[in-house]
Image (cartoon, one colour):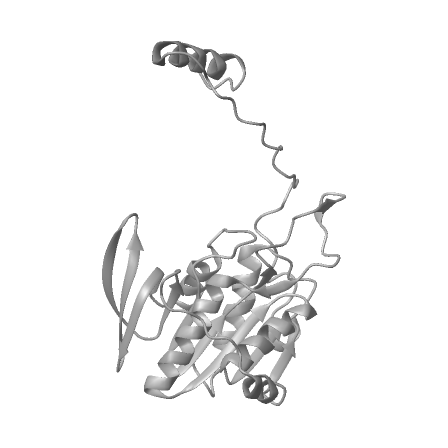
Length: 258
């Protein structure tokens, strides 16, 4: 089974976001595999351990994203590809278009299953996977917390607004991971040493048969600002009726939500 994992390199969850001239500053920032994509890498490894096959991890991003791919290789993936081209940008359509072109070109090793995270912790759009599935014309299930594969069929248990759904779908398919699917492993020292020898290709638009026009963005960021600092809370005194009256007053005069 050929398993492809799409992943993104994101800020470490403990990092503080700093804006400089309307852009997020990356000075001194630690980057990691997007946590939800890490679940996808781990699930791919577990599926390979049960069924055999090859795992290829793919990312679209700057050259530093190679570090995240190397981490995935150290965890147990077999190959990696980094589509790194400043013309692609961060627009979800552009990224999914580049990924679909790469995956369609893998005729010698066609995908049976594509895994990814349900969303990235930086943009949080959750668009890449569903756009990619549409471009590839394959079924897609999101927010999966349990996955089994039997032959050409996959059975996925997914979050559904406080409940769960069980969905059966034919491969090839694209499935995104939710927290609870598994517990990602830490790369071992032998795994880290082996990762240095595993293939990692760096590609540009021309290598995947696309032009700048093909990945023209569909959205444009107008501005980026940090949320206003939170004000200190207020403790309302008095009896319940007095507290309720004071709360309504504050909601009208200060919060202006009534």
